[in-house]
Length: 270
Image (cartoon, rainbow, N blue to C red):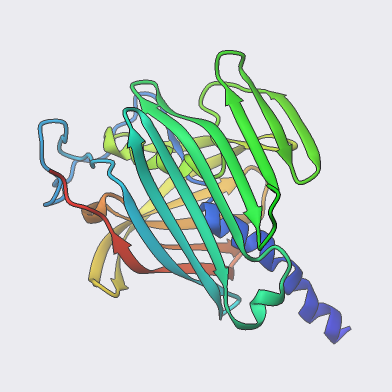
């Protein structure tokens, strides 16, 4: 019995790393809501930046990932501006020590998206597990036909879309873009192989977080799938373009995993 209870949490490590590696779930804005005004970041300049808003810029952030109190590895997120309205967001999870032995713990995920006046729209999502040479996930979002097609694991996908749906990576960029526009997120719709998942989202308050680059003021947001006992909390730093500096998942009052920022590279505005 003791052996089984120890093994069960480790069987949930790969899904937890995947959830953390996508920061799922973030948010999209509710129409008409406005973010509380605050001073713009010192490095954000130019006429397009308004009080209470941020400027969406490329960045690379690395986090330490802790699973039930043990450091299980690192997760790195990179946002690229590939030209015009095209962007790419990538996530790499690198397990540490014995966690290398957990199947599916090492994952590379990427999402290509369009960001324009209509918001954020994912166009292509793919994922590779470990040293595999074949894609564990490949999705193409056809916004003209309002369909998403491809596969996840061995399951073929051909499903209807609805406006505003995000994939597990583009949803975080949708949040940052919303905050760039001064909007307050309230809920999200995320694509899943079993359909579209709806999440509640709310601002929980403010905090100051110790980081390798000093104590940083952060706003805390919560996301929770409807009827789920688990909730995710995110500490977003306005002074750093609202890039998350901490994230965690709780089931009730039990902390299941957390991420803490180790390094952030974010070029200043021209």
